[in-house]
Length: 143
Length: 155
Image (cartoon, rainbow over all chains, first blue to last red; front, side, top):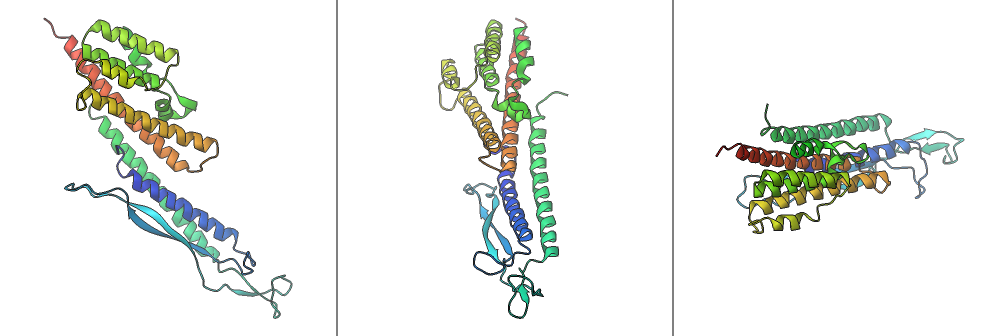
């Protein structure tokens, strides 16, 4: 029984946006981490979404199954980071240059806003869908 | 007057102040009221409606909850045992509302105990429970309306 229209898609999108927010937060947190577990500077992570069909389309039905969002994976951005001259740094090479993570703070801030707005939009879609169901229930009531 | 008292008592049962969905989750006794009413309406006697609502109210006051007895109550209704009858459809609706309410309750418990951090899923299942409970209430209202209409027939 699916009383609220499109709710499964919205729920999966909210899940996906939450994960994207997590990844952006991780990128920002590690923007200055010059040494990870593998000895290399932190590499920026990106999430990739894909759509999957949730449920089956009933034969002869005009209604197609709704696509929901699935997180295909969290990939690393392999572009090299900036070299910064900082001879006092423990991770500096013999020329005094330090390889910084490839995290661009302004880009991460944009991603943060995009993720937050997308979450808002999906939450709004859920709210409106609920309103529609509620309106349908008032059809029978008097006054 | 017991019927009116029972209807006015319908909005109670708020679980942890969680709003309507919480009310639905804690509202097993209210669902009992619905099915008792249905039973009484089916037998179409004012005395039965009054006693059913009184019983349901007593259940509510004594804190009896749960829909486990729903099936047996529906089975007692004459002609209500068939797989495709209206009564069994209604019984399925009550079951599905109960399942949604239980899912919402579980999601809430998981959030509160720290087992899950999926706030939106909890909110969504609460809303689903709330909407399906509203649907059940509307169905009940229609049943009560039709009973009232019939009881006004002058012979």
